[in-house]
View 1 (tube, rainbow, N blue to C red):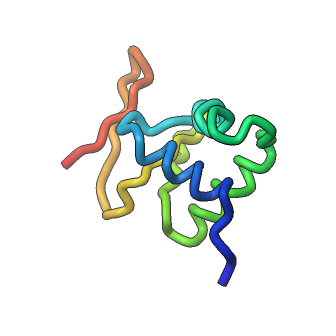
View 2 (cartoon, one colour):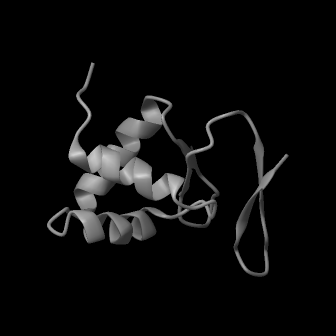
Length: 90
């Protein structure tokens, strides 16, 4: 089992802090507030690992940036074509 790192903890914390389904860049900006020297590559690698482990959900909408969700229960998403916002569908 892979160990919990400070970077992974900060990434999960950032994703859980919002219901907006953030992009990797938004998460990176949030994590940098806590860990200023973190690289974007580190954030991407950890997002991949967290997603593969089922700790977060990666939402891949073709034609736009991938988004991330900390709500891992099975549910649908709706993307507004006008503003690009992403919403959970109960």
